[in-house]
Amino acid sequence: MRSNRFLRAARRTFTVGTAALLIGAVTIPSLVTPAAAADGPASVADLAQGLLGAVVNISTSQRVKGTEGPGAVPMPQLPEGSPFQDFFDDFFKNRPGEQGNPSQKVQSLGSGFVVDAEQGIVVTNNHVIADADDIEVNFSDGVTLKATLVGTDTKTDVAVLKVDPKGHKLTAVKFGDSSKMRVGDWVMAIGNPFGLGGTVTVGIVSARNRDINSGPYDDFIQTDAAINRGNSGGPLFNSDGEVIGINTAIISPSGGSIGIGFSIPSQLALGVVDQLRQFGETRRGWLGVRIQPVTDDIAESLGMATAKGALVAGVIKGGPVDNGTILAGDVIIKFDGRDVNEMRDLPRVVAESTVGKAVDVVIVRKGVEQTVKVTLGRLEDGERLASGENGTADKDNGDEAPAVSTASVLGMTVGELNDETRTKFGIAAEVSGVVITEVTKDSAAAERGIQAGEVITEIAQESVATPKDVMDRIAALKEQGRKNALLMLASKTGELRFVTIRMD
Image (cartoon, rainbow, N blue to C red):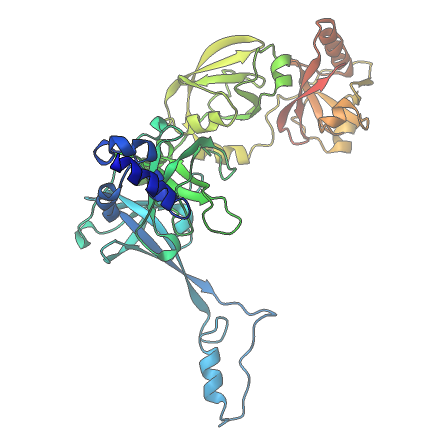
């Protein structure tokens, strides 16, 4: 009874300002008494003590060239022997941009953690060490070691450093499995907020799979454990003291923690760290397709019961599936045994796959589900290939155009794609189909952002080459009772996208 009264008193006492003391960081059976279990662990001191030595402060310095602009104040020219000479010398001698001082040293602080004590491997965020000339790793006992950069990945904001393991006795932590974390699980963050060093904060997993538009593989863990400036690159621990996240970003109007922080999940970070250690760069899998979301309208147009997966908007020439294995208009719903529920799921699962691996890809093609085998390429090679590609549409077969030259349908005027219209709209030679010459204001086509100069290459996954083809396909869809028409559109340079247009 006395124990219960104490707990109630504690809850009242710490309502404001120190709630973290009661709601704790991690649920460790040895640290939680039955009476206190509902209120969080009684203490996380033992857990924190064992982890503090592996968490480090990262300090960097960069030489920034001095500038002379409208805001710069020049050194005054004083008469020889002026009594003010010493004063102005002291004031101006360290200003950037002055003769003899062409640059200044800029410093920044962040966090990191040791993952391999024998090799001296430290993990942090890329933005913590970006463009740094010098990197130092500061340990909790005051020892400082110079660090060299092993490799970085801007897409996931991960960097790997190396220090001399003989220069200091290192303590390492290991990665855990972030996929096992559930919303509500206790977590602990340790880092270097505002340069204070070795700071422990606690909270829970607030959400998973967050997309904050910071990169192509966003899949953040959201936590309410306090994360502030300087915590970047520090670890987020589970109740077993394993790293299940790398603290990276916060949402805050003031710059301080408001309980919305984001961590890169270990499931994503671990593969990147291994590749950087092994190769000094990333080597991600590549499928060689351009994709877009599957909306309800697109799903209905494709005969799908639910809107899911990633719609293939184009296939990159020279890529792994430029052999007809996967076609524009296919919907990828499963990749190598992993479900693709949303478009953003596909780039992540492909990138996590091994280059050269043969995988099964489940697609929906014209309403029929089927499985195809694909051997993955390397993303970094694919990016260079895609950047030099002018288009992905098939070349015109050179047939003579039919007699019907224009047609009006769904708020669009469409016409033949010939030398005259190519020149008028600047359409590349490799683009084929039917050109849109005019879009009626406030029409269904205008609502979808369709513009004159775009080219209709397919309707309902069937190619069109003439205005009559367009009219016939729309008429056929209406006869089938379809409410929407699925159009594949090509830009002037050949970039493809899918658009649905209402036919009512």
